Length: 248
Ligand SMILES: [Zn+2]
Image (cartoon, rainbow, N blue to C red):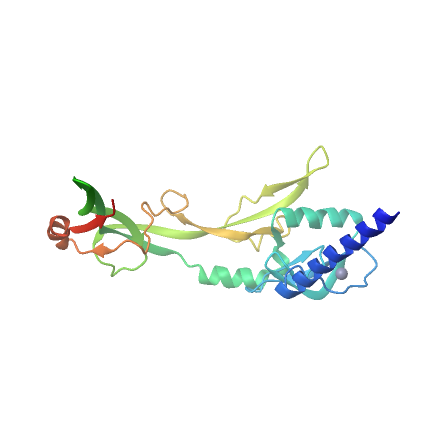
């Protein structure tokens, strides 16, 4: 009995510390709620998309809790959980956001361009006890795509890009399990919402008009690479040379 009391005390101390920590960091904070029946609260994210979660957390999965709620049956509760696990939002709760996105997501042209950067090649020289290292630089030319028609070093190739939207319906399979079925219509997802009422959080993507595949950027450009002009490459490639002394 004495042991139990000690353990409970310890447990309480740990629990207390955890609560303090959560309050301090502001995460995992729950709202007070006295609704006795099954229900789901409405949540909204910074882009104005709303969805319902069976949760009382003030912030949950990037969404903020609102006071609005819907009552749920036991069956609905399972469905809401399935929606949460599959990252599904209802189209009819987010029509304005979807319309705004569709308005903004106009088809566009991309232009292929070349860019060159210097790849450092290390060389080691061993002289007696010391080793030094120097670099020569080889120019490497790669290609990517830009929406900027005035970009430098365009190759003249173009491609048409457009936005593709995916919506879903939830069906029960023969084992009574929920499954997702994708809507065959990929443009006007609002007009098909009665049959296919759901979208995922990332519900659109950019496709290449010719191939209908997701646009790729060949060699993904990074900011770290220092671009150089074509005419500089020959000069820099051989002239740029740096020597570092390494400790022995
Ligand atoms: Zn509640």
